[in-house]
Image (cartoon, rainbow, N blue to C red):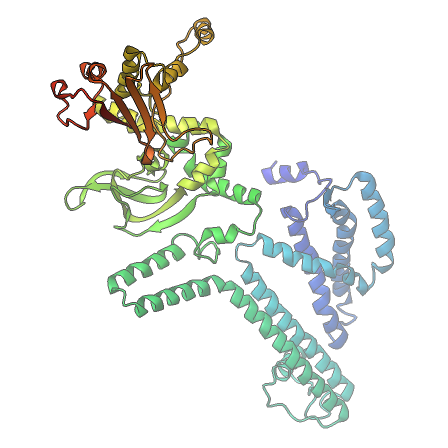
Length: 605
């Protein structure tokens, strides 16, 4: 048994039909519309012209019964199975609902089966078929032109039938205005209808009142009918060429702008080449996108539909990029909607070494080359479709967003661009993917570096640097206060920095060392002192032999002043960690110290 015959025998009619996507239903609509057009076109002919005779009546009836059978099959078989929308929900008819619809359709149409009014029940099918055809055709404007032309031909057809009926009413050949009965009746009457409705002229003048009224009606109907037809044709052709008109308008405006500012001819030629390639090669003209920017076409769609289109168009390319392999699949989907397609001409630099990198590139079509040398003509490597570059500048932080190579297009190159801001907004919702990308980026940064360079890179990339030790100057001041026996400002600070015994026990139980002392560094922003704090802190010994003052200065500095007898200040000079500036003896030598009170200053940040 042939395969096609087996497929027919094994075919089972569906219980429900989707009227928007089912191809079988669209094919069935074609037969229903063909039967409907048979009646619409030939009923006026059979009424006006003497083409139906007793000798050929059986052929006409056979065609009529065939059309009626198609109508009945559509009413009883296809229409009850159509899915429909009720309250926003898609309703699939059940067998019981199908039986009820079968009875209702039968009661509604059985009285009109053998009547020509049966075709009126199918006039909505004609418009439904037009909508389905426009939805499934790639170039719907062609069908619109054919349909509009058919409307024009049908209006001429009806006028030809009416003219023959009027001529027969007046009497064939009775006057010069009516049809004389010679030649093919339909062709001659159709010729008269064309000259009348289009108002070409050259017709004999009507003589009787009937002829005058008929001609006047023809003229009025012709003016309105043809103006409507011409307007529709203009709209159809305008919609078909809207994309090209938009492209020409952009090109003309750009050329006008360049001419007004005397842009060099070489630059103008490159811009014209970009427009031409973007329009013809990128698929704008062939795919009927009617726009130079793909994003403009999808902006009206919901986000889910834009994502579905982006997945179908670009996922096969992005999924091959090694950088995103292992990342969350939904993260890749979200990234697809942020990609922007850009075309580069042959020889155009995509990025140059040292530039600030704010985006990464994925090659959709074409090739790019990494070049170098004194004249940037040495080709190091050629990158082809499906590869990615510029990701280091996009993902690296801490000053690592500089371009590390010169990349230019080799031929026409169509690239996807992902902005750094868009990627950051996406990665906020996918922390695991963010960690993976950072790990890959760190590996790429340290791949080709020497050990000492890797260590430098690692230190530069640290977000939180290690906590430094207590400043030596501060330690020296504390030591001075201890040796002199001062229980003042520095001693209190030292006690405050020492952890308590309870804290030490907690750290010992947890098996880890206590955290280091906080970094003693003044904030660049001046700190607001509490109302009860004094402007300077003063500490002195019991006998007031040594006085230490801590005075705040501008820009986060502090002035440490030590005043006392020389024998006490010798301790400061004996400590190499403490550097004192003697205001009376700039050399700072101990023998030169007088017996009077000496003031020494220490600046600390």
